[in-house]
Length: 323
Image (cartoon, rainbow, N blue to C red; front, side):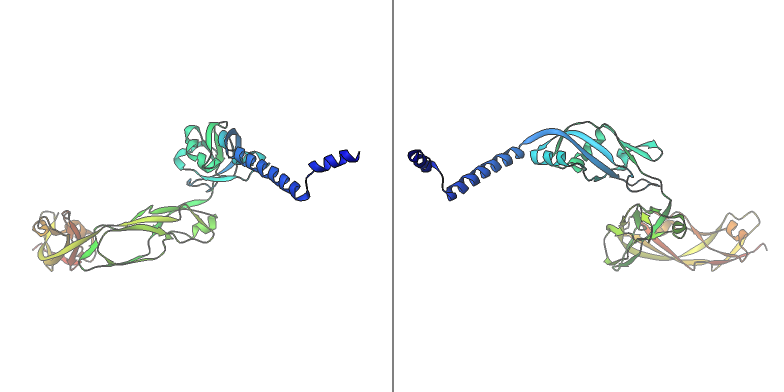
């Protein structure tokens, strides 16, 4: 018996050797597990989705969750994580308005191949969807009180000498939809941009302007794009006689003063002399409808390249002379 006990003792491990063996087994098991979880596997994955979209007259996000189920190929880590969650947190996905189909009663559908554009945002960029189990996603965007109002830019412009805008400032969009309580909406007739100062302008400008927030209201967009076409100009001036047009037979008008100083700002370089075809006239019908006899002159359509026209004086006194 003593002999047998001694034999067993020769094959037993000391305390330190036992710990090393256990750690080695644990490490090898961990390496095996990590290696297998790093491999690609296929399985069913379900993700609840809340849709976000800009739809005029409706909430910015869906009031419901659509459950999207698909057969996905991804790493074992992702698949295990997805399938082990009892209640997965919904994913918020921004959807283009053009991909949604109106189904009536505030319901919008995402169908067919349109879903493919949002695979990465729903399941993760590392996931490959082999097939959708859910064919159509239905989202409810509740109606809200709203109104459309213009955008007013707060921009201070300072041009370099002999430069000016070749066209009015353009905003895209130039109006926005405002959402909120009816009482608050009644007090809003426009939305302003944040202030922008541009100095020493000598070339066309473009950029983005943030919209100023309106307390208690939501805007359909947070910013707008602006575009300002700028041109170098040369200034031309001359004296032009004031004509009378559309006077009935037997009726004559005397205009004071009979001439006006005309100043044109033309885009540089000038192709032809715009003053050679310039006409300035008083319309008899304006005089006939006037109580004071003071009339604003008209011009023919200005030639291309004329950026601005200034007439001095701006108003003329007219007296009928039938003698």
